[in-house]
Length: 444
Figure (cartoon, rainbow, N blue to C red):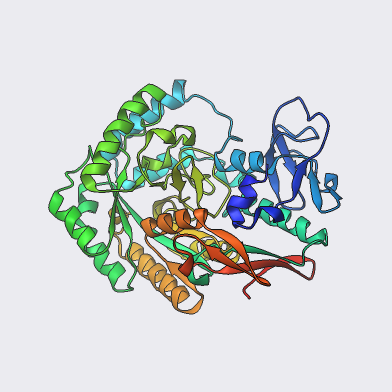
């Protein structure tokens, strides 16, 4: 039950002193419950949870007991973290009947739809999104807050004044950001050179997700140019028709083709079209990392969200969650070119020291307002890189770092600690401690 906490912080095992409360758990199955103010969890527990996140949730924080140095918990934190990250709290309904027919017709006709028509259709599909209480809009940090609360309980037990762990990002960077571009049309594919020029003017590299088997021909010369300029090429779905995850059988056949295109393109990363996903099936992919899971999916066709701003492993695949609103949703669903929402999300994620990930489509930068907004966003990120210790990285670099960090260990070094493992020269030891009865992270 301690593994998820240890994987998150990469602290020595001895500091994760949690145990499950004795006795029978509620036999009604998983449900929603609170774990202190503002933190919603989902899973099995000692008390009966609620069927809906909108209900008055029982708070299990006061059920925690400390015996000697051990925190006795009324739930398994690894199970709770997995339920949230893997979206097991989402009611799994088959898309049948009228909505299935509507989606099939929409994706069949989508290439011919002008943006203004797509905008109206998508608003109808997403009706009521603003009233959804969970995951929390515009950034949900439930998993991260769960681990922080457990760290806080450990420190409050009085056994340790500070707890060492391996800091989340290399060289002690405060947070991380990645820029990604999903290329949906032939016009967008032709615009990749101009988009790289814009990014390079701010010294920000990015990844391009290319649809391999529909809509346009991804010629070898353009793909090679993207890589030679220091950008990444990843796979974007197979056909981007909304049907990749319709059934396990058809998915496995499509995944086999996708894996072949990954070899052909020399790609290590993947993103599904429109962020449709089933994380339980990711074992069919032969990618190093995926970028298909939103932090909170209220404005995406598929509801849910992973409720974390940190990368996490789904089997052998590293998930780099989409933690900010997509440009299309911002410009065409919310109908604004203001950076206010992006800025608010950036601020929340940086306060959590998380991963700030963007999807900006070259296909939707055809308006001057969109180009201006994107230029302002690049300027904002470049400023944070210079002034706020933001690590601006490629997705592949984040994947490499997170895998290295997952294999590093902390070992005693006289009165301090040192990091061992491949890449340790880039890592930093940090400490969790209490300041005014709240958790704080410090460097020695």
